[in-house]
Length: 314
Image (tube, rainbow, N blue to C red):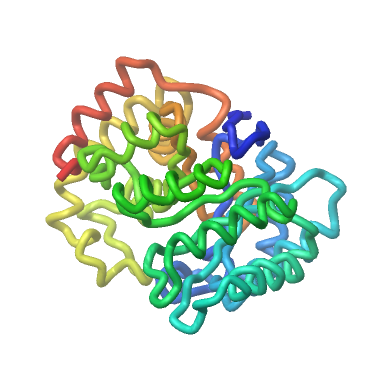
């Protein structure tokens, strides 16, 4: 378990978080794989069996469907489950009660009296100011319906401002959910990691396996045949570029009896304030991702991976 100081309490966060965006079969995440509620419940139970009890969802994931699925699965266990959900700052939401009503709706779908982490899904708030939005969330922390407040996709300047607005209310900004992997390292050069460490903010890394590129499953001789096929980062020239990265991940993995994907996730886990969010649609995928936890690559291996992926800092 990784312990992160969210707000005034110590909230124990597992080394990886299970993402549920792919549970609702969106066009950008299903990749043509058939699965149903039984497979998703299997993924949920496999996570708990493996010691991972933190799940990431949002009101906009399937119009609340992923929250409803989590609620249904939570009724089948007495084990503690921790939830992160997200508020969608839509155009027509411009009063404080819009925020409180959205939180109430999420809690009702989740069948919970409070939520561990509630994040702003994106920084554009239209007619509602960031101050109004974040002050309302700070009030909900004081009301006991939220344990910690986070943001998602906020720029460095926006993250700093959110930290200051919440801080003025005595509430700590807990997280910023950002795209981050060995093949997408721009948040390092943009200063996010350093600033987050300085402020005590945890980076929740989405797309930690670069849509599957870091699994080693796809090569110039084995191109994807599913929804990844038209993506430019899965064409032959791009796959040729990442061959040295996959080769190094494979080499390190053999030492620990781990897959390239598990090594790629471990590289993120090794960083003090980074927790990867992994999408898992069945029990086997969960077990594979849990295999990235409970061990660490050496500092030298970490440095080798850092060095070989420097072209992706840009």
